[in-house]
Amino acid sequence: MRNSEIITATQQWLQEIVIGFDLCPFAKHALGSIQFLLSEASDEQHLLADLEQACLQLKNDISVETLLLIHPNVLQDFDAYNQFLGYADGLLEVMQLDGDLQVASFHPDYQFADTDFESAENYTNRSPFPMLHLLREASVELAISSYPEVDDIPQRNIETMQQLGAEKLKSILSALQAVTKP
Image (cartoon, rainbow, N blue to C red):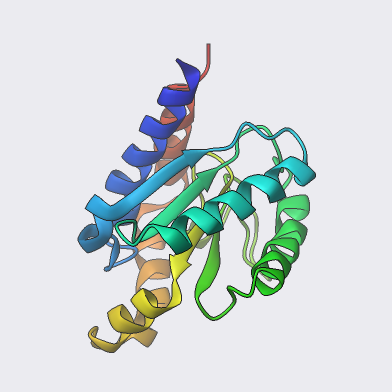
């Protein structure tokens, strides 16, 4: 039961935060072709193996536009998670998928460099659970080419988060996480 609750909470986060606050103007369009996978890995080695399988799945299934690999049992510490991103990129290189796929990062404690941990802008990449977002490079390039002023998205997102305020955003994220607690 907890697994389905984690996926449901992640889907709700995508709807309420990412799409609801228009953080990614491309997410709503891709909504029907997003796959949510839950990794039960409890260490980095098993997570890397799950990531490899997710990459192969995305490579071979053209009906899936993007994939969220949610891993609630490993890399709870943001610094360790951030370091793992290098391994994820390395895996894409070894699999000869760099240039075809890319990894975007979301974590409950996401923190941009040179920001205070409590800064509202960190919520642009905060999610209820640690996850790795696999995207097709070609899809990203197509979306970017058809969107005016794509370079303005990060600043607009920061302003949106600041207007909402860190306390409100923390409350929303906490409510999504609470659904999965026994």
